[in-house]
Length: 446
Image: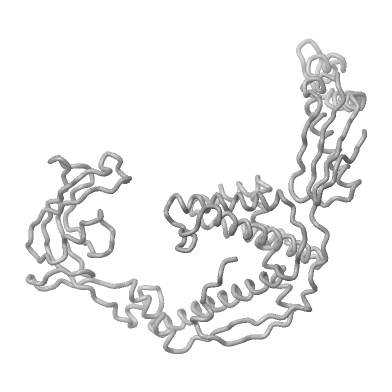
C-alpha cells in the first residue's frame, strides 16, 4: 500500500492512496477461506465447496466487500499516520475503474480528502468572570401568575334577550352553510358556541355577528380562504343561514378553593404554593439561559481560529433551509423580512460560523476536563424524548437504539450542558438581582 500526500490547504489535506491488486487478491483469498465452512451449494457437502469454485461463483461480489473494507482500513491508516483529527466524514474519490478493481484486473486507487479539527488552546475557565442575573418574585407577581390561570378558565353567562353581541362575547348559534345553493359536508351545526374575535371560524364570519341578539336570523356571507383544508371549498363563496339562540357575556373565573380543585389541588393555598414553585423554576431556567448566553458570547470572543469549511457549510445549509421554509410560510421575524436574501445569507453564515466555533471550543474544553456522558444519562434523555410521543414510546426508543446518528444528536446537548456547568463551577460568577423585565429581555441575535 502507498499513501502519498498530494496537497495541503488550510485545514484540508488530500492523499493519493494505492493498494496493489495482489494485496486485494490476498485479502479475497483469506475472506473466501474464512467463509468456506458456511458455504452450502448444490452438489457439494456443506462446508466442502472448493475455494476455487466459490471464487468462480462469487469472487467479484466478495471482492466488492474486500474493496469497501480496504478503503475504510487505509483511510483510517492515513488519518492515524498523519495524526489528523477529522472534522466530519472524509471524502473518498475512486480513481480506478471500479469493475476492473473488483475483477482483480487493476490496483485500487483513490484520493482521500480530509478536513481536520483546528489546533487551538481553549481558554482556562478559571480566568473567566460572569454576572448571573437573578430575580425573586414578590407577592404581586405571584398573584398575577395565579390570575393568568384564571384567564384560561373563563366562562360565559347568558345575557338578556335584548343584549347585543360585542367582541369578546360568545354567541350560541345554529347554522347551515351552502355553496351555490347546495349544502356541504361539515357546514351545519346546532347549539354551537362561538366567541366573537377568537378567529376560529372562516375569516369574516365572526365580524358579521357583532350587534346580533337572541332570536335574530341572518345570512352570513363569507369566502373560503385559498388554500383551505377542504380543497373542494377553497376560494368559494358561501352563505351560512344562521340563527342566534343566545348571547353570552364573558365571566372571569373566581379564584378560590373550588378553582384550585380543578387543577387537582386541595385548596387555594396549595395552588398558590404550586404556582410559586413553578414560577420560581421558570426564573431559574431563564437566569441560567442568560448566563449560558453570556458564557457562549465570551467563548466566541476569546477564540479565533480557522474553521473547517465543510462543517460551516453543513451548518449553514441546515440553518438556511429553515430560513427558506419560514420565508415561504410568511413566518420570518419582522427584521429578517425586511432584508434581501443576500443580507440574510451573510447574517446566517456568521451564525453558522459561530455555532461551529463554539461547538469545537466546547468539545475541546470537555475533552481536556475528561467530561463523559453515562449510559444512564443517555437512557434518561431517550425516555424523555419518547414521552413526547404518547403511544409510540417503544418505537421511538427502538429508533434510537438502531440509529447511532440519532443517539449522537441526543448526546450533543447533554455534553454541552455539562461543559457549561463546568465553566460555571470554575469561573468567577457574581449574582445580580434585576427586575423581571430585564431578566426576560430578549438578547440580540448574532
